[in-house]
Length: 307
Ligand code: PSU
Ligand code: MN
Image (cartoon, rainbow, N blue to C red):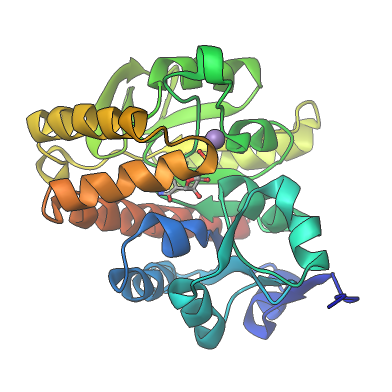
């Protein structure tokens, strides 16, 4: 099959909101298709959208259905990507080929940011960014999330990068690539499941309004085009028990090595190990992270739209 219409389909509600300068928050679909276990994934995908709505913005979950890129998946499309058995994981580089081949696909942070920025969405909520993998010095496994964000002006709300990565190396790469990083009401860079990755951040912001002001300044200065990462940590009493976390991570990394898991499978395999090895505790934490990030992203989009 050759798909001839490879443009981006905007859901009517999202289109109207964008035309009227109303707040919109982009959401990724890889966490739905590949990051969260089934059947919770579909329920959570809907809850994330509801969290955005509850805080005054329009959700736009991005993905590809039958080769068609969609900004604002409707419930049927969301269900298809959450339950399908042949859903590709789409980074930015995959978007065009997948469209040409008529694929179903879930967009990563890289894929989602590229599409969101292309249609003029300024804020994006996710769980944790991809980054530099622990063996990257010889595997070269660094997520394209980083290089894509380096050239994509969008504000990404996340809980840092997953602790399965080399967090220090990822922070160095964020710096090199010119991607802004601010801690939301914290001086510490979060470690996804845990509140503190052990690394600090240079900038701390206290409110959605301050983040909106930084977005506006980047635009009016016209001096630098890149993403701004807003690192939003879990409250201390909601994080995964750090001892359980460290043990689970060590086991997961051993499994990845034993089974020679590589490339784009590494992230899903480690996440699913966490969810099974912690009897669902890490899943509950993962869901809390995403819902909190969706809420904050909506508040930022509202502040950015008000002027
Ligand atoms: N964070 C999560 N769950 C996920 C991901 C991140 O909590 O499923 C996904 C995101 O879509 C991110 C991707 O962009 O993993 C990174 O994958 P890779 O390392 O293969 O680039
Ligand atoms: Mn990778």
